[in-house]
Length: 228
Image 1 (cartoon, rainbow, N blue to C red):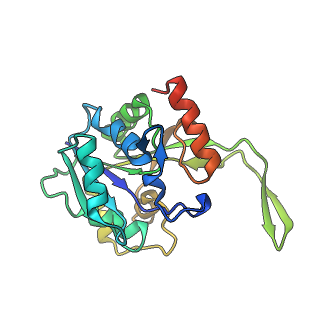
Image 2 (image 1 turned 45 degrees about the vertical axis):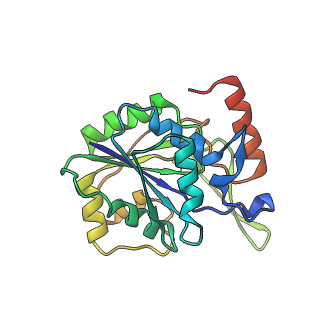
């Protein structure tokens, strides 16, 4: 079986809004609704668990699920960090086998191409742990107190995307290793610290994480042009 965990936690502070990014309106629906559709339409996904922010009402998210006709999605209250939110969702998986897959995706990435999702699943079945990445094209500068300290070679630098995919036993082992980095911004960090190798495949630049208003505008552009 393949389990998808959707991590919904980011606030829309850069949008001058108290609304979470995943609840922002996007072409007649919420950002989250678009994100969920990528998984609901996939035959490769058996169960979906949505970790919603601990300081928000479950009813708000339940309403979205009802609107999306999404009965197979389970809701779980998140924690005070991404690590805790995803782990809360992971602990709701009770019927997994050792080599079943767990996919972890940002709720604010509404343009996940199905071909990327399928490729990640195929790779994880073979290599146990995989994430999508895209190369950095811009020159990278390390800056301190508004001054450049050094220029960082970019040849081996990549931007990590989601979903990140792991065989169940690997993620279970990583959580059991008691490594909880203070700045664990993704699950690959936990798996790396537990001693496992994480493979990568080419991501997709359309798989944008909405962070700023300009990102929302770009997502709207892709939606109007067709993106799958």
